[in-house]
Length: 159
Image (cartoon, rainbow, N blue to C red; front, side, top):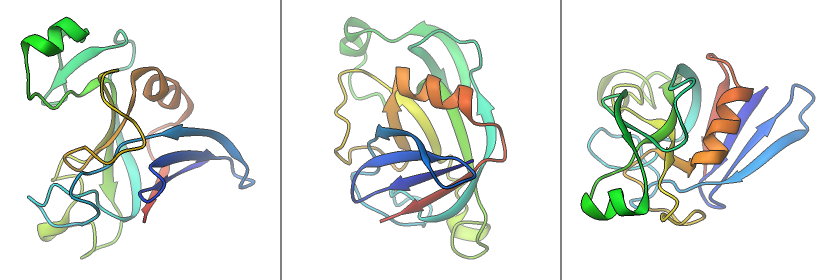
């Protein structure tokens, strides 16, 4: 099984070992486009792996900060009371780059950049690049994907 994120189409596909598409989801990648450098707020391209799965058993909409649940749960009213927050909700799939000098080690390390596939608020549009570098998904979609993929799953991100 592997995941492909298409930045141009703003979609994520989950593929079986036979190459058949099992699931397809709309996503939101970086507002600043694709790029690998730390501080760029761009979505890194290339071959990655899911290094860690965070949030198993958390309720849909659970708020995470620093990869830890805060005990809060996202609602439109809660979001309105905290404007400008970059919501990391429900589940986190933390990505580790596999291409030294491109998305691993040095100034381009995806894991050190805290690049995730994660849930976001239902008020955020999908299919439109708006993130700070991560791959955002609807909470229901990231929960479903989380249940389907183990740590170590390959993730290819391309334009």
